[in-house]
Length: 528
Image (cartoon, rainbow, N blue to C red; front, side):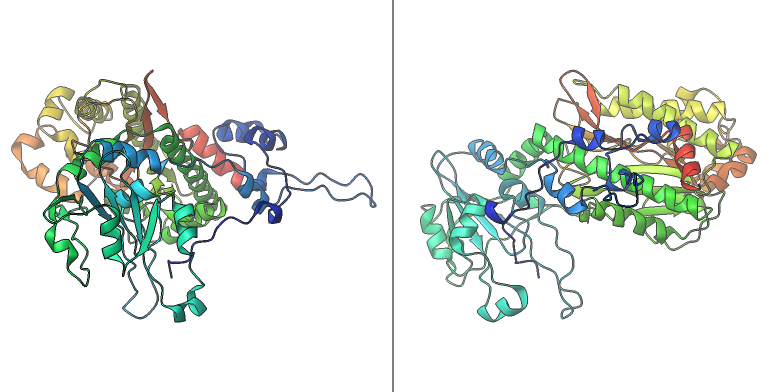
């Protein structure tokens, strides 16, 4: 129920299977057909690619394939340095103060039906790396100030049901804390950080999407010891946003791994649709994606999957995923898995039956052209909002080229016509939250090395936007209504990649294929 943490087994009991590097695994993989090779050059090698050669004779032993457990256990997965994060954030605060950061709490299903899937509060995860619910962290600011981890005390009778928790010493060693107390020992925890009455304690705020930021409450300890402290909610919040916005190399490695696995899962969903002739339900696509990410070792998704077929792709945050797709439909899938809390955020749009018709191909290629041009502009010292405005103008030009919009692209974009077809921003910061934090909010002002941002242009045919625009004389003069109504059955197309800004320029972390040729070749091969 979220409180049991498993330590790695001692070295003597671990599998003796030697670790295999990525290059060694790749050398063990047989060469696929040329078309598959082109489509998979950026995709991580998987166990199902490893063939079993035919036996030379009936008495020959079968060839061995590396077991999936050994392969996943030997993968050199990255680990963020949470100690370094703590030191950087706390050193930016005035000395002689306190900082209190609460973790998240477990949520039950309907009160009595076990716990819902728990995801740690991002600021707490960033500073501690603790993924279980019910923990708190208390820090002093300044040199040699301790990190005190407060753990939930599990009632002894729950050991039978939940397993015995780690001891105090095991928790301290596993999580890198200086001191560990339980949540009925707040007096000891405050004494450990030399708390004084009237002392300032920095407490972060947390903002849920669509809600105003709220300050985390101080612990409601039975002795009321926190009542004598003065809570301050701005300084720590801003320090966390500043540091979380600039990713370290280890954090980018986490996002890179999440992207590789998520990209493979997107391709698995295409193959599923192809072998079923495009006659699938949206929830099948969602389930194939989730199953593939879990099979590849990433057990959690970063956000609810969007799988919208046909006209449903025009609903930006469509999550019903219960409609049946036709072979000619495009399916828009916005889905990403997370690794150590760092989530990929990838969107791909593909033909359910495996082939783009000319009309759908035209819209798809228009969006892909806008994305490719925008990614090239995501370099240091570039104003991100300028990249976004250029993307809107390019979108307007492509709509003009397709005969959907009239006039000059600059005039159409200025009048808001492009926003009728792309009613969202070009992207946002990415990290421990799908819309990650930064000093300027989730959309940065100026790109700097260490930023990881999404690039997600789209063209959608949204009745709720186009209907009123047709009746607005200022908008209607730009719109070719007959052509738009013909194209409206496309629904929508979005293509989304995750881009790391580097000192030299940029790196696209998203490895999933995205050209029409790549998608159609992969789906054609899946049918045979």
